[in-house]
Image 1: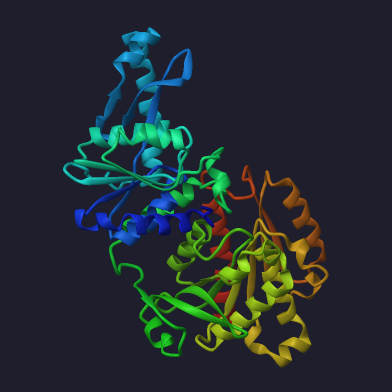
Image 2 (image 1 turned 45 degrees about the horizontal axis):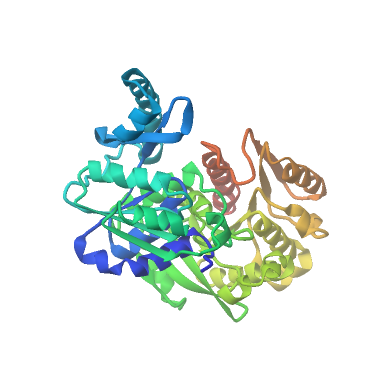
Length: 458
């Protein structure tokens, strides 16, 4: 069984866990990769979501050999047999625990902030990871959860190695695994997109799951008809079908009350509208009063053919069609936020809207500002010189190849533009604080060029 990404795996896993709904479970994701899977499970089951932060305790002279694990709330599991056979003395045990407690507390604070850990006493705890190779971490997590008072422990994963499943089945009350391939080598080979999950993505998903229902948005299924605009005035999030030249594309449209502009997201290859990175940026824009539209540029059938994600002409055309669709629903200025190959599509679409001939013929496709995150503007050649919208290029300082491509592209732009380099960041901006910096830069750029510009024009 092959999964598109962790969100896809979580949705499929949730179907296999429906029998737990009546038990009012608590869903616990193993950070970092298990949290996007757990988020979809928790949402489907209507269950609260939290992380289970554990630290394995390794024998001092052989760290890979664990003699126990610790978790929050003083949870502690020690294998006296391994301690004895490895000759680990009381002082060694205490020293290892002290070091790991400090890291445990740091990670828990990073992921959860000031929110309290969900109580597990007497509850069914569903421990979720994105897959299991050896099972050491999953086993430690389940043991810690049991020590924290869970009455029943269910381990749920999309894919796992056969020997790990056999070993772990006897340590939990129930093990749910969708796929146990005999030729198992690594978890990542069973995902089309297995990019590393960042701390920021974990934080964003936990915050979204913890938000009270209706506090910032209410999700209502919609078919993209004209009556959406009236409800959006109340500040709601809508699931919509974007009409892109006759092709129906799934999307999520969010317009805060009094939104002065809307930002359309063009995702990169291997990603989609549910990308935690793009959603984290979108939420930052929403908090600043900007609307957002996250949508898939390709249909599921089209995404199955890898070449389509690099067809910049088609992607740009879809983005332009979607801009016209959105323009019929709101009169406010529109901007583009593009990531990776999506940035090339955004620039190519902006270039088409930027030429004087195109503007005269099709004002509905106009775009007021563009932000590129780790983008490939070189793929938008030779139309870069036609872009008229103010353009911000954001690149990680350690993403050297893409940084060079952006510097070259910047020299070809004839619009107002700026290149911002986030020090120490790699291509996916996974480093602590890197994605926050991207969101801050994007917010300021769109506010200056969409909101302030519209107010000045008015």
